[in-house]
Length: 147
Image (cartoon, rainbow, N blue to C red; front, side, top):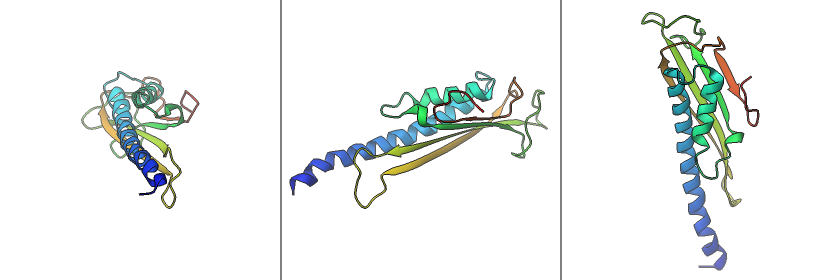
């Protein structure tokens, strides 16, 4: 086996392992944000997005500042915003947290993509609407607060 191939083989395994770990972190971030919003540990979209970013920032080599997080509080139809009243069985409120992250390989491999877009979302039934009345929040990369 040529020397160049022997040197690249460990990097290929490292890239695959990093991609797997980052994919899990993105899913865990969506789950953590949705769970925090659902049980009112994060009673606003901005705090729920921060919980998602906090969760993904625990993964080595993941640059959490480059992730995009969307938080939406919607009714049962998925379109209507949750009202500022306590949800009931007849009028439930759901929170959806979506985390997007672009993974880049360590080595620019020939003939295969060097980036992968991870996009995961989690929806949970909320026990209360957001206390600030803002039913939609988008945390853009590097901004630190929702728009």
